[in-house]
Length: 335
Image 1 (cartoon, helix red, strand yellow):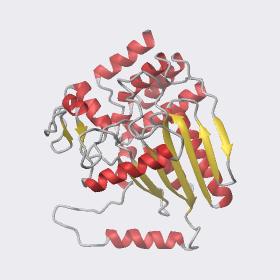
Image 2 (tube, helix red, strand yellow; image 1 turned 60 degrees about the vertical axis):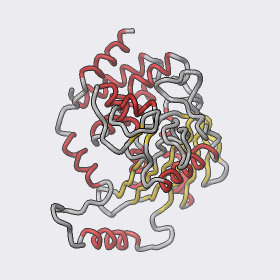
Image 3 (tube, rainbow, N blue to C red; image 1 turned 90 degrees about the vertical axis):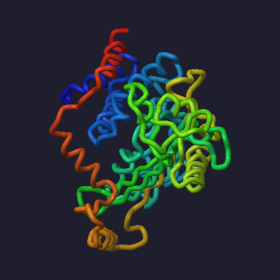
């Protein structure tokens, strides 16, 4: 499907489910970006879940976004149970605005939902010459180190910085060995997941995505990854007024109420502490890239470069939507 047609399909689907044209475009831009950077588990594969939650009245298609400025640098946003893309859109834009005005912008968002790729928002700041941290929590998927029960989400950690080139440094990683979206997509399409990323409900390793969803995901770096998941839960849940400590509802299975996911955006000027940032970041990156390479490695990439290459390549192609997912979307537009 052509990119323009794919975007129109998403806008059509969201407007049919009660979103304004403006909010539908915000959501479509985020979903299309996910497809183009190769993160299709966060693209069309997610569209039906947002619409089902709107139908179940646990996502508000017409939210009244409340923005409270605590100071010139700090803002608190109540997203009124909007689709997560909308809450995050206001969040990162407020953080950027505050940072440009005062040097730093800190924005918390509560009563939001799943917002897709953290890197999508952090990159917006980095392309404006700003450094950004983005945090969001998620439904239980990881058992805290030493326990048997899932509590923390895959809770992504994202950092972005300008590089004095068109491609910013963007590190966007969940604290689990694999993001949950990939497991859900594998379950939907009847595919296996890699070894060493999940356990079944009995605590045994599994490559069956359905058994993995019933069990738990493994964190990166064992207790260190568990600690990072906890940190993100505090930053985006405890501090924002959002749900935390296992309270975030599963977007696919739990329609008992809104998710109330929290986001935290911390943005500041790259030259806040040093005036020659551009020169220093260029030297830093060049130093890493000039190191001797191990066998089989032709080039050293900094985080964000591979994604930028995929985006450039995929902009010339059509978006491939699996038939099963496309049928789901077509049914949504008929109902």
